[in-house]
Length: 232
Image 1 (cartoon, rainbow, N blue to C red):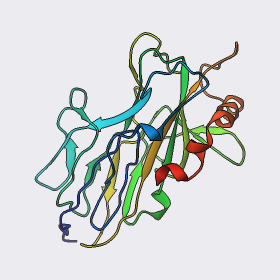
Image 2: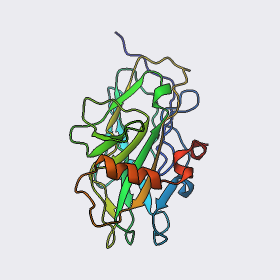
Image 3: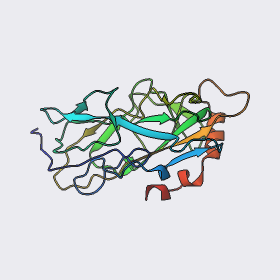
Image 4: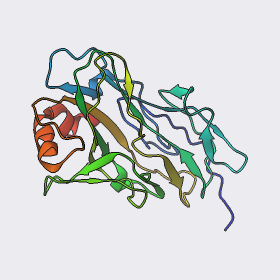
């Protein structure tokens, strides 16, 4: 099938805000880095903007796909994607960073809007380190490369110790998005990504997240993080 070039589609990843696919011909568009969408729970000693998220700077290849310029050294709070081509992939690797002088914390990510996406899909990677929280059973399950990106809550497998220095979680939340057979002018929908740091306390913190601990973490999340208003 002949690939269709999509008329100007702009995108940026909002750090600690929304990863949005919104507006006509806008793939992954969003606002700037907004502190109001970062939540720190369990201590009054979290520094300002304790939890942030960034992504690799990207460039477009001749085939229309987007790849990283330099994944490690070139991170940004947003990319712009123009002239997307159906059948190609877009690098989108949101990574969370916990700021120095934060207490030892669990990091919770929330993804919204995937269910409403049109012809855009993505998958987690093998051994991702991110666990999906089941709101019905209160259990957790590690995401793999056979798991499609879906709405819901995800908890990183271990606590993050940023008491001395900034710590970047060593695994991105997901890796790429695939552009399907979309038409020029088609509204794709919106994806929102937010994160919350929850202080780890107690004498029996597990090495890897378990269901009981996940349920405790989720019970400590603020309403601003768990309701729908933060995406507005």
